[in-house]
Length: 346
Image 1 (cartoon, helix red, strand yellow):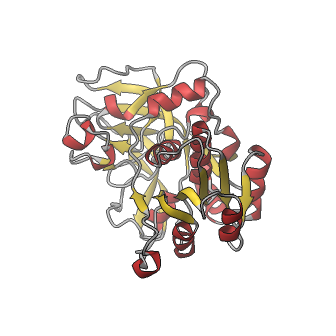
Image 2 (cartoon, rainbow, N blue to C red; image 1 turned 60 degrees about the horizontal axis):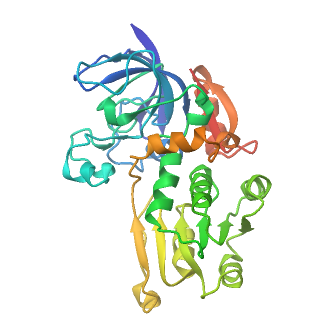
Image 3 (cartoon, rainbow, N blue to C red; image 1 turned 90 degrees about the vertical axis):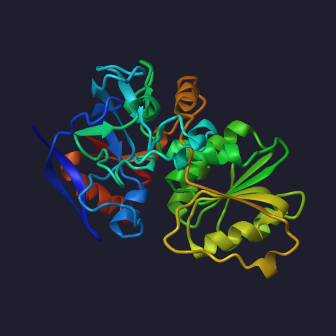
């Protein structure tokens, strides 16, 4: 039996091709019929050749929801017919790193970011999910596919970023970048109820999006960000900075806008190495936190969605069928037509 799958063919080239529907390879696997997926900036990084571990020939896509089709004999959390959100990460739940909540560093051969990178992902009609008891989260009846779409990836990233940043009630938090992951980081920061949140965004469409949907948030551009942050913070800069833009300039801006002894959380994925100019930083005593996301809070995020505390549906600005996914990529990569996120219907 064949299906359509959007595939990493070679550097700078993806293609929609026919592949065999995946089968169970391990008792801990599940096969999920994808009902809704999305295009992520990380997919663009793969196409541009910026993810060396990505394997040519794999189906891309790591942000999806669907219906469980089949399960291996060791799977107990889900069963055929269940609606599920798929985690961006594969993790065993048993190794040292998993037991300490660092699931991005799972030592299993498929551990970490595997789906749509090292093994076939979900921009397809079906996907095989290893370690399904860890990698799938049940979607309750009151939650739509669109509400749950970002749970396993960018919303998990935002939740993880807010958690490791240790945000206090009196803090000023600066978020650099109002792309999809930046907005998810904003939503999860708002759950912490800091005294003040500032978003720095150079794209006027995205800046306006933040102003429209989150009117309590202060918005500035990169040219004025340092002065704006100083004027709107109590101790010479932001108490917490989240860098979600991923450019040379935004990396520098992050530590420049941080007060002494602040936390700078690096959320973005960079195309090239960054430099820490330590002589210029001397005396600021900054704490840098870096990642990949530890996506182990999906069940909690779904609970927050069900309670109306998180809503990411405004991020879905475009809907494209799988058969026209290349058009979705073009719109997303070129930031056309006010795009924030493209949902891919299957």
